[in-house]
Length: 369
Image (cartoon, rainbow, N blue to C red; front, top):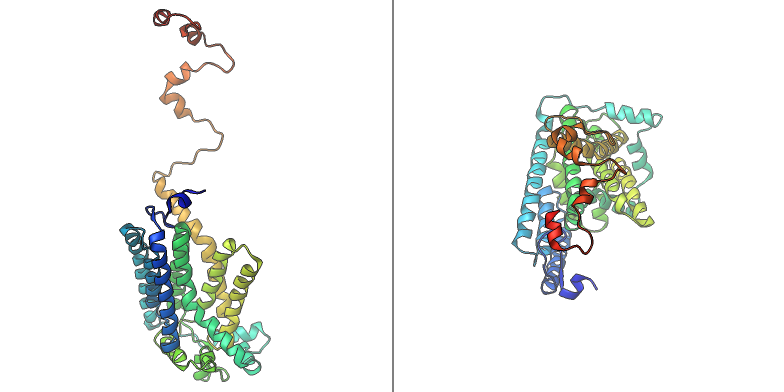
């Protein structure tokens, strides 16, 4: 029987003090269930919130409830961990809104030409909208599109509860991917298909990412999402951040997905997102491919960059690493007496033998020796 079973205590998932859990387990379950019910009701009545800080607020509320019974240090850890992350993401959102106001010309026709080149002259968004428009698909597409706003905060919250080191690594990836996208928005603002069609540059294209909410009868939900879309940078289309975060989520969760259906769901999600984005007129195929490349590059390079920086900080003098198995002469020169005192392998140690009393000898003999 484990210690938790015998004493009724358990350790905090983030390394906080051990406190009794039986007294607070019910409160945590009740509070978490109430918050989830309130979130679902809010989405049904007013629509899914797209503001990053609002969604982080919901996640933090659940984490605060989960910290009940773990002491004030748990709440302090919650604030210390999450407030800097929230501040960085807020700065990203504000900067993204101004990214198209720096005088860089907006690319309108180049991405459409690239898509036509990839597909032999046919624009994928136009073809998909002409051949693929069932109500069931529209519902699926809206749910997949909207999941972008929820999945990342939820994964962050689960990691924080279960594995704080993994949470820290994922938080760095989220910030790094957001920063990479922001730099590209500034250097290369581009019009998405629905905006290019509105300007008459390409054929007619509808913006369908929220059409599934009308099929479900949730008109307010679609209106809220449309309002949120209207408040962000309309030409922040390259790369597709929706695709980038879907791919990043799959890359991060695949190592901890132990069942086949879980892995299939993660891969399917990473594939479904760009298809939905191209069909709905939100992105070109080129945008989604670049989003996947950005996610893979950040996932692969950023942890190695962080490790290299941490190594450089630990060794500010830049001294070379010792080679495995090489001699360490400084140990010989710094402490010569130690080396001199060591007998050769297999050699007798007469001084030691002489100093030892015989078994059973009187104590006075030992002192004399």
